[in-house]
Length: 232
Ligand code: SF4
Image (cartoon, rainbow, N blue to C red; front, top):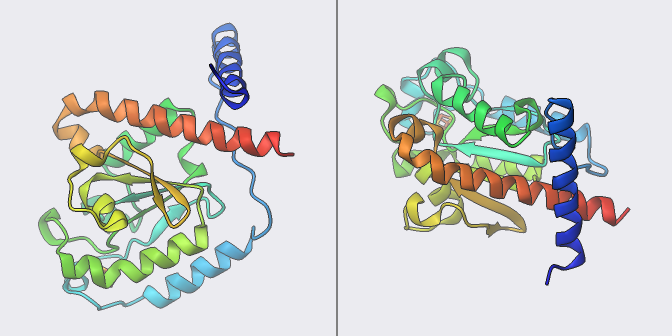
């Protein structure tokens, strides 16, 4: 038997679907409202930005054009963590601006989330040469910046893209095939691993499972919204 919360979320979902069908327009998910702290996050992120400038803690500093710290809404309830900047990201100094980034934007849009309403970053902030995978010591060297970002953004939900982000965050040895599609706890924050959009470009057959994960993300965000609305 459905409990009251589940009935409430189902009703919300059906109402949105009905309005979308009737009007032919898509309704973005409402932002999760957060109390306090607004404004202070931006300042604290700028402090991290200043700290990371000129960082030479690992060998990736030799190849980069730009350090790619992160971008998006600093008050975002959803934080997305990828692997490393690619060529375009390195040139533009922004995460997820290449082909994988465009797919990520579409994946978010499919569950009614506008990209500018989330905060996006990577496990390492400098591009590994020839887009190789980041090494363990490079991930470790860069990890304090990621932890500092998570502390500042203090998201409700983290979406981890791919093996490296997931293993770094959860400290697990299993691969993304095993870990994807499940909600984990990261220091009181919900964490959902899914495939990296770059993997989806190379292996389109994985898109089906990625869609299931995105729907789970949508449900978690709706629940977060619902719980907050109901507690008002
Ligand atoms: S990857 Fe991180 S630790 Fe390594 S040089 Fe770049 S900013 Fe510094």
